[in-house]
Every structure is written in C-alpha cells, then in structure tokens.
Length: 363
Image 1 (cartoon, rainbow, N blue to C red):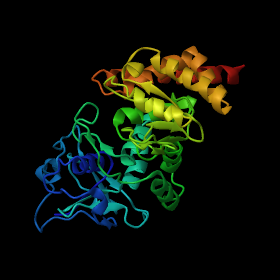
Image 2: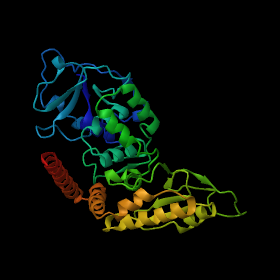
Image 3: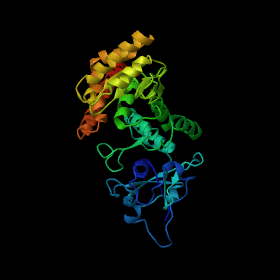
Image 4: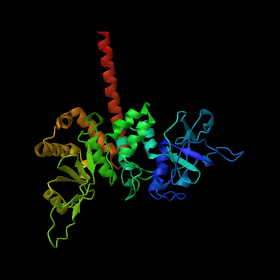
C-alpha cells in the first residue's frame, strides 16, 4: 500500500514522528527522503477500507466519518471513494520534493506545503503558532495538540526562509497570500508553545488581534562582554524574545520561578528583558498591560514608533477581540469556547458593516 496524506492528517503524522509517538517511524523528520506526489496504490483486488485509511499505526487518532483522513492525489481519477477519506487533487505541478516519505508506505506533506495547506483552514493567529512550531524546537501532541503533552528539544523541521522560498516556488495561487502574510509574523527557534503564543501576539498585526511589534528574534545567545574571575555565572545568556534591532525583550517562565540573576546579567549587556509568567496571559487585560510597558520601553530606549500598538491597546473594540484571541490560544479546555465567541463577534461585526454598505448604496 502507498498513501499520501495532507492537511491536518499530515500535521498529526509529523507531530507523532517529532514527539516520538510514531511506532513505525522513529527517524528525525529532517532525515526522511523528500518525494513528489504519486497516486495512492493498493495490492490488486484490495479496497480502501476504513482500516487501510486508519493512521493509528502512525500514532494519530483513528479515521472516522466526522474526522476522515485527508489524502493528496494527483488526478481526479485517483481520488479515494470512501466516507473515511477526503481527497485533495493537486492537478498542477508542485515544487520538487513536496512530500516526506516515512518509509512505511505513507507519505505526508512537507512542512512547507503543510503551512500553505493549513492557511486555508486556520486563522492568522493559529497559523502563526503553527509556523512557530514548525520552525521551532518543540512539538505539540498529535492527538490533543492544545492540552496534550509537549515534546521539547527537538530539531526544527523547517525555517522561515525555507517556507518563504517554497511559497515563491509554489506560485501565485489563492492560498499563498494568506500564508505569506502569516509568515511575516513568525521567527525561527521558538522553544515552547507558550513562548510562541507571546511571540505571535507581539508580532501579529493589530488587525489580527496582535500588537504589531515584530519582527522578533527568539533565543539568541548573548555573550557577556566581561566575566569576573571565578564567577559561576554562565558566559552567555539567552533572552526568549527580543524585538529585532532593539534593546527590549521578554523572558517567559510558566512556573513563576523567575531567573532574576539572568535578567540582571542581560541588563549589564544593555538589554532590558521583562519577566513574564502564565498569569500575565490568563488574567483579563494583563497582556495589554504588559505590552503597554513594552511600548514605553521601545519608545524611551530605542525611539521606536509604537503608535499602532498604542491605538490598539486604547481601542475598546480591539481590546475585547484581542482578549478573546489571547484566551483562545492558551493551553486550557476553555480555549475553544473563546475561539467560537471571537468568531461570532467578528461575524456580527462583518454583518453590521455589510448592512451599512447596503444602506449607503440605497441613499
């Protein structure tokens, strides 16, 4: 059997491999061969049953009619006719090596193609978080990505530059502008999902419930210019997030155990890095308060123009949307309800705008 999966099914397989939960493939994704798309194939006389479309052997949830396996095919004639499969037909030629071969009869969309595919179903904030994951050193759980176990210290499977190059080679298709817009809010080398949430909020445009403070630099090692003899302090420090070209950044610690010595040593190198804990994201209005301080420092220390971020923080309507967005991105069971509330809020706003436009045309 040979099958190529894409979209959410490919993402689940990639996460299973990265997190060591794929029983039939324990290789680093970066070492797996890249292939071009081929038609799905079975032994003569065999049929695409639910079992053959089930990816549980690869560490992901079984296929169902509600959650079918997403399959990539090269022609309409090779679509899989089954309620347990949803076929995407790539009739136009894709860039070379757009799929990754597990070596076990299953191929999946490359991280670069996957980023484009998910841009069709993810909003800009969720897509940015996916980009931070693909370009970072952590992997979410393949079955329960929001609150499941997170695997740390894994190799990135792509980079911002590689995704950008793939987008260029992919061509001017409709999904590319959405992917390219989200890519501008992503930086390489995120070390954890919560760090990625903070970075995404900082760098996303204010129109996408962000603060527009990017681009950012993540986990860049800073060497101490002076080191006292006999000192036990490390010769380098790594601030989690720095606003690119500035002296202002953020260090995230989810357990509230702030490394004050490290922040002091960064200050000695001319960097002002604010300590942040999970309470600064879960508490109502706390993210706005934090970013207001960041804006103050960027203005005072680096002469940055942060007028857009300040206007976004001052806007009652944007504050409401942004708070829902913050809560929708956090790792807790309530996140989905806040995401739905945000969608409903934006839908009502769009409907009011549409009605207003109709009234203007009738006047």
